[in-house]
Image 1 (cartoon, helix red, strand yellow):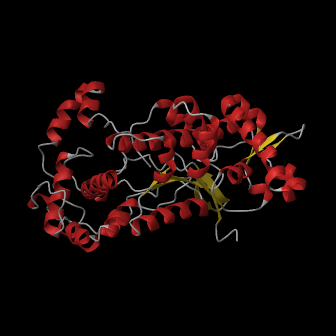
Image 2 (cartoon, rainbow, N blue to C red):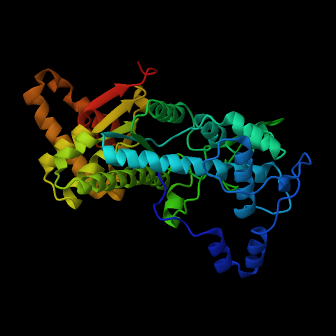
Length: 416
């Protein structure tokens, strides 16, 4: 999940601009020392030294203490588990940023074909211990935190699970990304940063109680992106209720936002690499880009890629369609009819009229192609086509659009 390339304002800029009285507090926190941890260890005995690539426990402890002193997350007079978590996360992120930049630079120079995974859900678990484990520094961080008077498991509990999914689909997406990273495959994951997950469950005497899961209610050491207000509204809730038209429109906005923002970023990265190599043409795109759709939620990537290629890049239909079908692949997770996503044509036309025109043209050409290439399927054409024009409830069959448009189609093991 990508963040804007331009960094957000520093904390001091935000506070000085909006809360002038806090300026003195900020200046003081940057010169103060941490005092006592929860078990009585005096963390001031650990030097506060920036060492982003630290591997030895003593060096890591110094780097954590550096962030505790110079990254003003909290009061300088205590070093309890919450504060220790923030400082530890900043320390781990130092190392991740360095390796992230090296990885990006490597693939930028080598220029292999890269996979771009689009999913409405990710269940990645807690980032801190996952990152420390992947860096093979778990023992070193455990020792470092012990020097500062804390236990790694206690610090781990300060982080809430990222509420970016609700079940198997999100966990599968995160497992795919983990697997691709383990195999050193050039791959990116794109998703939305929701504020609220599905719900927080409590069991009381009255039974199950459900409340909103505001996993971002406290500062998270990994996420510093400042979202535009409209983007915040769109991404506020994972799977907004679709019982009303407004709910349906919001859910469709989410899907379009994910697809459009992702594709525009993918195209920009492709152009950046191509421009450095001199002359190029759009036929190179499928040889360098593979867009994998995790279920039907990102299906709008198909008409959106067509729109970008035709309306923005000036390509004709045939060239844009050839590129799109060679670029898009699709994974299906169920064959149950009630779970295959369908969108009202009325809602689609209201929110995305031009995309609906593109979908209608894809459907029209598919209807014309089948009799001449697969006459054995002609009797099934009404169920295979993208548009169901039932007068009572005309819909767009998203799974059908994926099958018609994608060059690769896979069923998950659960479906099989």
